[in-house]
Image 1 (spheres, rainbow over the protein chains, first blue to last red):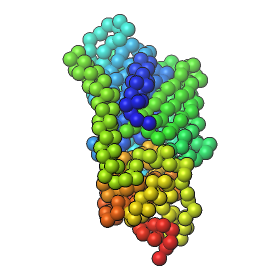
Image 2: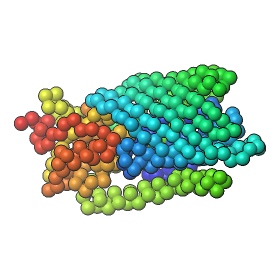
Image 3: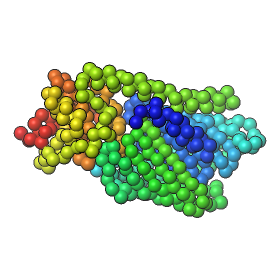
Length: 218
Length: 160
């Protein structure tokens, strides 16, 4: 699959994601690698493009639309790989992620542009058939929001695909957002993974909202 | 603030387009490299993954070279076979990273990352060499670690 051929669908997916968050898959790539990530959950949608200058960090630009509170954040988004644990059959990772940018009202929400700051921790452990991940984030966006969220995810692969095969994962994500009326929700999802593309689709059973994520790496 | 927002929006849009152009250039560079070294299709792993063979697995010394079409072609050219046990390769993104990092090297004629055996199979260009330290350093650039490296007949599944 050449990227030029995939550019249009990628842009379409990125746009979709920008119009409408989760435990990211590999938020730091190989040295010299680019990654495009689109995420849409019950609260917000985001598009992130990042470059990995060294295998321990990535630096990206992110646009995030908070649909519930009608504001958007435009930020510079670094991610640091603090620790990676290796084994013959497993890999574990600890990341610190954050961002600084501007928060603006959307959909006619009044208010001036304000500085937005966020940061958090991500951790995951996986084998070829088991996955456990955790992520949290605290966001401070002036009058627009002060939010904390955390999400825990477990998953298993019904079969173990080799390089280039279609990999399939069945997962369950539990997220906790203390400021929401439905503070704890559950989202079963399916992950498809082939070569440079990862796509996730799920449905939040608590608040009846779809989840859609994708990651494209090159 | 609005200037900063506009700048970030525009740069984000650029990031969706520039890497594509960069990838196109990289593909051209890959093709140039392939022209220099026939049968060196570093990015054709997906197409060959269904033609792999693990018949040479030797539990005493670890997995042997995975035989893809590119690997066989490179071996036929007389390149040195190398198998490296890699820690932490559990998904296709891991394989992609190894392919991208090792595939850029002119010494490498063919490459395959086998998730089943957690082994990186390399065949070098005839006359080329690559030290264990270089292999380990490249694996680190990809985000992983090398546990062991086997060469020559041992890499082919014939322990000395």
